[in-house]
Length: 212
Image (tube, rainbow, N blue to C red; front, side, top):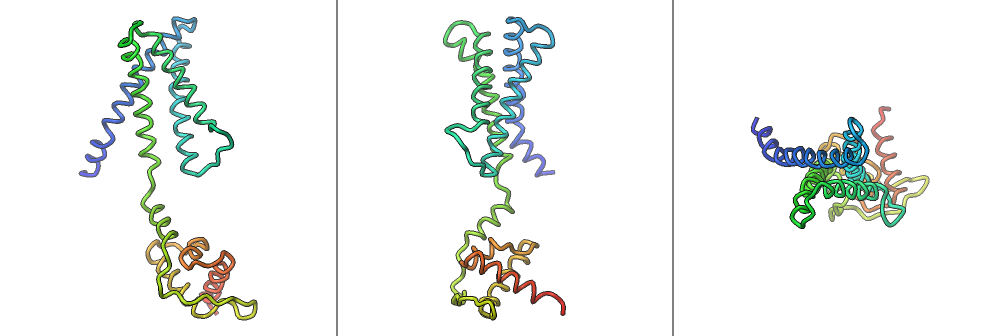
């Protein structure tokens, strides 16, 4: 119950801001569409399209950042779409403003506040999960000083026994901590070995664990 109350107090103001600011911006866009030949349900459709385009583009931009998508140009497609939506939204809001500086500022406030609220919510949604952070930290951890010296593996003998024992200890610690088998990438990062040697070590551990 306390956690729910904390989440409501933490997220509630941002959600309320998004709803109020979105309603104000939506009204300005709808009125502008009505005045320029899009009456009835079409004015509502125009307003929905512009506001939802901004939300969709913001989420896609955050998804690209989270997944590490490589940008192929100076500006990504979600950023370009978001910029276009922002321009249309601000233009529609300013169209309804009194032609004074304060008129433009007050008319643009709902659109600006809506975009700020959406960006805050997206920032929280895409925050790193504790499990992912722990896995990343483990991958970046430096191997302890008791790691045995790396001896070259041969096709006949395989990895050095001391290194196999050390890899087994690291794998057991990972499984006890996270409940999942260690991956080749994590084992490679923990031991500071090559991809091939990490794969050979895991293969040796799995073979040894198979019942005879």
